[in-house]
Image 1 (cartoon, rainbow, N blue to C red):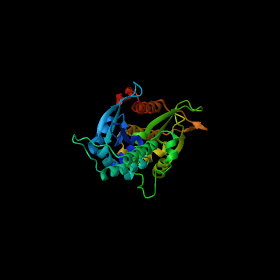
Image 2 (cartoon, rainbow, N blue to C red; image 1 turned 180 degrees about the horizontal axis):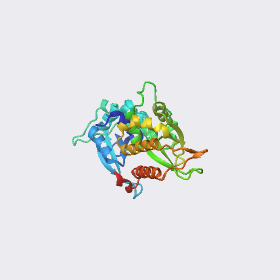
Image 3 (tube, rainbow, N blue to C red; image 1 turned 30 degrees about the vertical axis):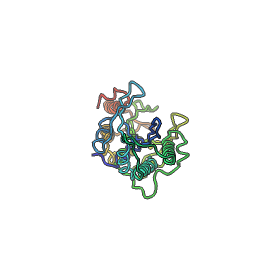
Image 4 (cartoon, rainbow, N blue to C red; image 1 turned 135 degrees about the vertical axis):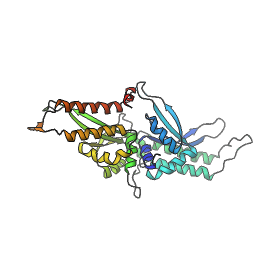
Length: 314
């Protein structure tokens, strides 16, 4: 069973909360609640589905060489039920969740009349205007561009909100994070240097600050790939910061559990084979040490690949 706090973190990292607009010929436009989460790991979506229901679908890859992607989707009453459960723990998409629940409450409070064929009769103009306005409001919240932030500059983390838990952070990292081993070349050392690194990215800095306040890390700017998109930030853990993070978060990781095990093996290996100094620079590492560290780097890199070759080590 997937804990609700983990699911909230996953939705904040890789989910979509919105209203779908359904145009009907000669009848008023209908709007329905929609919650969807995306991932290339079908197993985690299947596990969430067993816990909360939903419908699975395949999402087309942006590039043919990438892994297949999947979506787990809830609509209408099913979507409202899941949002109601995770809403107390949402940080990034808290405002969207609030709007969707208000819409659901509005629908429940009103009665729709059907014709003799069982079809819903058109809504009155006032109700159509209300639903269309809410649809546009949620749509603006979800925009990638800066307009969404300008129109809704609310703090993601408010007073009275539960503290960020290890389960939430695990869900967030599984959806939007990265665990890796970096390799760098240092001028005064003949062997490469290897470092563990964990990152989590988002366009809402205060969410990363909330995670940072309990789990450490350093926040850095992450330039948007498109000038029209929102400015993004990264929360980064490196070297000595990672062992403490994994100790708390690793038991709850699902998608990136294998990467976490490799990072732990790498950290233990570094502790057993500490690198000395040669004057002001680093001493040369023995060949067997480099071999082990390079193997671990390649293993975690293969797991992180977007392409189908990344599935080899699944």
